[in-house]
Image (cartoon, rainbow, N blue to C red; front, top):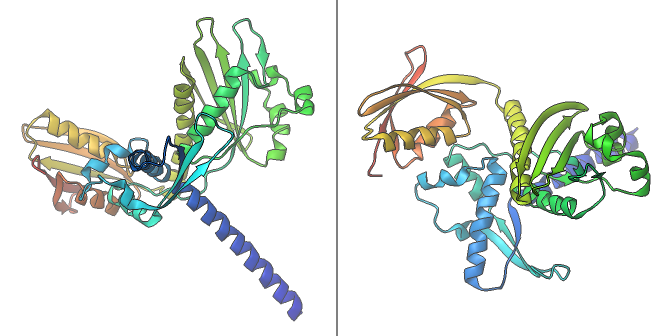
Length: 357
């Protein structure tokens, strides 16, 4: 019996360690960016670090507009290299255009501290793998699942965007067995029962169908259909001529859906507060204030109540902890909380605006 107990404890230990290692690997992926560079020169490296820094902030916060908030930090962020933990160069012989890659890992603690100062959520939860089925329709109506020029470019662009948003994606193997059973029409209609059956080996509950319609003009009309746990969850359309722009817009929509779901799971409580901002001089000050409120992750809705020459009042819908909102205002370089009135039916914040900050 003692032997069985020891074996059971050992299995539990291995299970816990596996979870810990998996989380550690994912955490390292969140804070590490690899991108092509043209040389080992410090000026080239510094430009790459700035680009990688933006990518990491977007990954961890889930906020595509995050860089618009960094101007409000005190002290300001002007040297992202200070947040770099380590970097290394990698040579890839297979890529003639970009043979040299730079891998940059940022200090997770420092990045999280910045995001907390900005009042942003820290999304360290691993995102689910998404299996993507692509189908393309030519101007003459011919449809295909196999790699033609458009599909190849579309896949490459999807992979690039998925790395920015830290969402793992998979593509089904288009082997003879799959192509003999799953037809382009199955994906175009789509017949989800067929697609779901041949998605089982990939062990994911998230399936994305992207239908690409090539127009005579060369424009691409794309229709995106998301299935989660076997049920259709969302659809959206993106069109244009530039594949990179289309995939970026479409995939960012996918990422935003998942971020919203995780947000709902993490913070289900919503509260209303009022913010009275004094010291406004003109419409520029007003626009700057309302824009700042709208960029905060915990602020889900901003409703202007009344305005005067030097004052504006807003009703804010806060999801989660109000203290995070207070911290975001405290870290702003142009807003300062003067008082908080908790005796009113709706908690009221009196805030001063300083144009000189």
